[in-house]
Length: 309
Image (cartoon, rainbow, N blue to C red):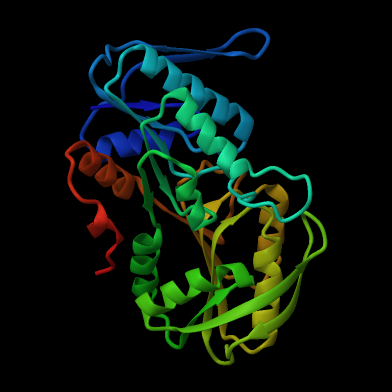
């Protein structure tokens, strides 16, 4: 087994390698003067199972292209198998044609990964479950839920209710509610533009409860903060949020700090773009991803990684 790391999130790759008890495979990654990417895998990977760790987060185009070039380098170096480990799968928001003349970028990325030489994909908390079906190669889809549930149980919150900040997150909120024996609520929203969201209505009882908003990603925190304000007005004792991928920019952090959200719990699936401040708690998924890599390599089941104990 050889684990390679791109430049997108070197810290996470090192933590994963340490958890898997292996040393990161040495690779040279640099830029030509015009910005083109150069990759050279220093160690011999002929006949090896290669795992390339690279979330396609900000800047997505740079990180995606770097990943594709690393995959091509491994393929031409005669690697036996190439697994693209994407803690965060970028371009996943566009998973269907919801308007005329728009692309389905989630499918485009799947095609690019396969065309480059990927033989397997390992990812976590996809924006839409159906993205797994965009691939004609095996996809192992992990969930951050076990990490979040363990943390929330340790908080020992009473009268807990899981809140979906929009109707698309209802299934996720219901799943968390089952694990934590909590109630469920959902906030309806109206998106005015890419950065502005207005919460319009709340379905469910949150009065006197500790509310936890759950979502797969946030970048500007618009959806979260709008939902949090409505939940607070409905009488919730406290408002927290659990988000798998924190893509927060500086505007999002400012919005979070001025919102009713006491704590945003997220993972280290992507590197921080700016200082989070005291309201953000980051939980590591390195152990989860390392265990999945080891099980894939040893041809054993990854099903138990989904179980909540």
